[in-house]
Image 1: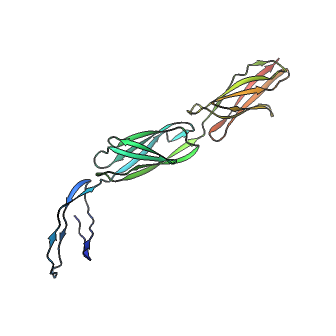
Image 2: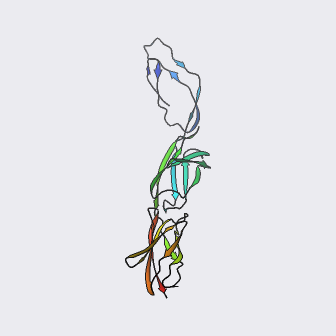
Image 3: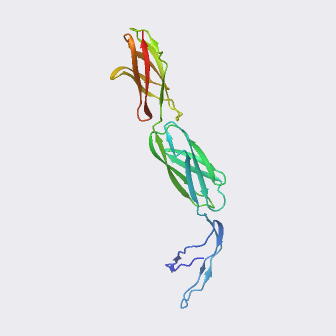
Length: 235
């Protein structure tokens, strides 16, 4: 299965065509024809050979909005079915993935920041399987948002009014946060903080009339901007 020259009493040979598993080997020394040293055979030695494996890593979804959990799946193939543990490394965190017939999956929490993150999946190998690894890029984009307001259509002229505005992020499992600003044309009327998807807005006193107002939500890098136009009448 392999032949190697003897140099200074030692020889190295590459073994080819070996399947995964445990195999028994013997080494035979064959001297040169002119040598005065006799041939000899070693005792039998058992060696474990790991089958070559391939690792596939996938995710559902690969591209997702901020605040969305996702499933990362690992599949190891090669040789006999693998029952063991692989690992997924992402952002300094390590998850153990239990493999049954070479397949396992984990859930990545919703806290990944906006951007592209490379996950590394590793199978360290065992007595009958070699090691393998693979990577996948997970994309996190800002979560889309929508504004809903609870301001009554008619308010009392000359009096400040307090109302709730709600910001939802339909594709995210994390409540929206940021700031909401109210405008009348180009005039800024007020600003309120959005926490857990809700803002308490105090609208300043308005004179009698009909006002076409605009709410603008700013969620920084994690939540996409959104606007809402609405009309209120001060009487």
